[in-house]
Length: 466
Ligand SMILES: Cc1cc2nc3c(=O)[nH]c(=O)nc-3n(C[C@H](O)[C@H](O)[C@H](O)COP(=O)(O)OP(=O)(O)OC[C@H]3O[C@@H](n4cnc5c(N)ncnc54)[C@H](O)[C@@H]3O)c2cc1C
Image 1 (cartoon, rainbow, N blue to C red):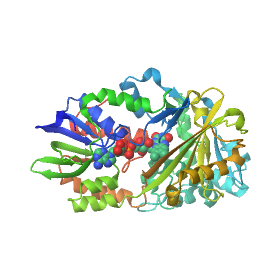
Image 2 (spheres, rainbow, N blue to C red):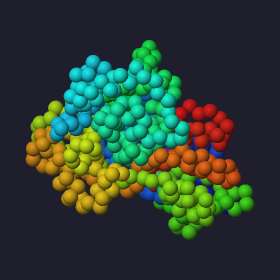
Image 3 (spheres, rainbow, N blue to C red):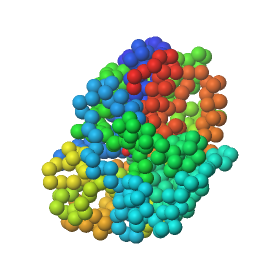
């Protein structure tokens, strides 16, 4: 525990040193708040960060962030990383789906889409004619699959939308709330009455500004990272926060005592703070708020999916596939167990040594929770058995890196927004308490950085640059 915290009441205690908590603590510190960031682990970053071995950069969680919104990029610049920003190579624009046992590129425009073998002709026409109709959301929260079926038909939902939901949430389109998980899609419907019309108009507007707005080939913007991976952002934040960070400080209990929040840590130490931000996964926030039955019951209702990331390093000439792209995803109707596999060293060439490539497969997700229970050897065998025929792999990988994330990706299931509204109501009666992190209003790095900035702003009343 940091000696800083003894014998005084902090302005703010931030608990959880993932990207959300680290960004929040940094913004509060810049506003001259007396803040300490408490993190259970021996390092900051949470699911974010990289390790380095055998000349490879291995990402633990996120591959990077998109630059179509400014939040993470601005934060990186703010902590001194402008010259270190590394946009993905142009090849990363190409994305693949597994269809009938082979990798098919996602088309980038309407003409390519009409020629693509991804969907049947009827399925393609159903998608293309979406722009001729006008849609309005039903009352209440709707699932991603129901929303997508209304707009794009069943086949596109089972192939394209299922893969998108897998890639981002490791989730189930039938269960996720479209408004909570993909608010931009609902905004397109509200503003333009159709996804296709909305995308065309946004593309035109983005082109006029020299940017990209995304489309069927993938989300807008370029993926960005750093030469040594996302760990550079974690390290830069850690160095800015300096002795304001207390590592190996696991919060076990938080309760309001008088006008203050009293925090108890696993070490037995206690501290007091006027404000408390719990930037930890909802099920863990439920544990530390156990004395507050109403709030912790609501937090326990937010589910999360477990996922395993399998990094493989191969000699380039042991991989027959051209690997000209970001990677591929597997829609649920295709046989197999992997959710997909990315080609990180194609996106970021400095992340692999000369003459070698890195692959990053994912297994698990909400529909395959048992994957987390498999042994390392079983995961490795499953991964290689599936990738060998698809990518033409020869021999054994030079390096294998497994990273398990139990309950690592929160699932914004139908009912999520109602639950957030009820939580907000309860928080109104608990002054100084805030819930942050990827469990509530967006799981992307940009979402976390944006929400952390808004929270800092609401606590300090000032506008921040990042
Ligand atoms: C496999 C994977 C791939 C991803 N890919 C991308 C991507 O490519 N692009 C993208 O934008 N996003 C991606 N994401 C999502 C994004 O990385 C996460 O949503 C984001 O990093 C979560 O940050 P966070 O601060 O909310 O939570 P976390 O990173 O989970 O941090 C929470 C922190 O709280 C600490 N903690 C927990 N309990 C306590 C306690 N009681 N006391 C003190 N500390 C505690 C934990 O140790 C942890 O450090 C990915 C996520 C995963 C898992």
